[in-house]
Length: 91
Image: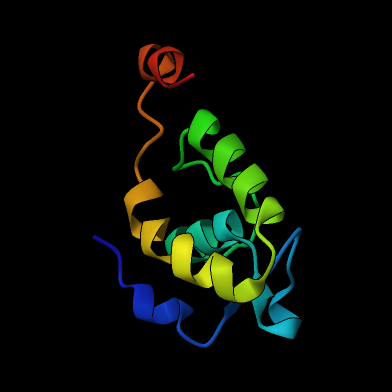
């Protein structure tokens, strides 16, 4: 499991965030935690899960709701890119 304390100083935001504003979307946080980069399509995450979480992230009404609902899922998303068969089942 990853050390999510790296994310404590960051707030969650809708859309593409920016480290200079200390704000990232859920998938950028996954990438930042695993690689130090901030793409919203991290290579460690299932593309189906990524698509779902990006849509959910952007649909939530506030950063507080993103923090409450999505932040706990960040570590669970890491390592979900497990192959085409799993992606077919997920979709």
